[in-house]
Length: 345
Image (tube, rainbow, N blue to C red):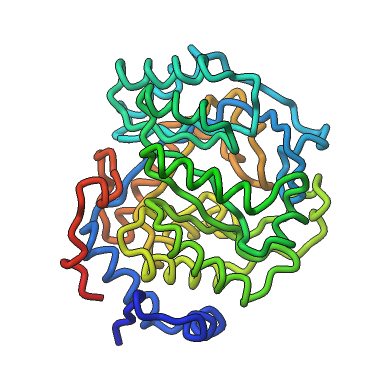
């Protein structure tokens, strides 16, 4: 039986989140993805250029109060050099990601974006945390295409607990700014945060649908030992996959990644994410000498493999799922005013 995501109400979403691994949910998610994207899986190369962060998020190994990581910052030239691997490896997009590090000012980030656009012809996604409207507008003018800013949880009390000093309202306001500025905007959540309920997750899905995003993501909570939540239980992989399948059904046009957190949790996790309706994988192309320092959760970037080997491994995962690695920039279908009339749910 095919599930029509546009008609799912809150109670039905709760039931699907709590239910057994009904193959109808995952079959519907895959059919929806294939209807919109065919067999293509878009590849985005991530350059994690700084592990400094001014925030104190209780789940993240990069939090300002953690003195264990060896902190690093790549120079602008090192960032562009890392990004230059993407087209050689068949990656159409580079994702510039860091902790919330204001060491890199508006002009510096802008120059990096312009250099990548002019020299490499890649789509550029930014994931730099909450920044001012002036900065975001400037980077959009410099050529940035997309921006990823996860809200982590739609429960405002839980949000404040896990992101001290931040509010859900501010986070959502920044997402609205990104959309107003013409970015392809992305957001998402962590599944299994301590204190999170299935009711919270159903509300997360409702908010993701209401935000009308171009990118949506979800990954399991992986406790980092050097954080206040280090002794907590990890998030459920099965629940994460059901959440992902529901994301695909409620937002059929969204680009949805099979996250690295899935792979850390289970070696076959990314393949399982594709089976749940994901259409994006984002391998790291961060230079090997600093890669292990970007530990937002334990096990991330643990592999010492050459970047080329990492990308080959990802492409094998895609092929094993019967899908095709795409060299396309992979924009949101809405960028081209995709007519959802072709989607019959």
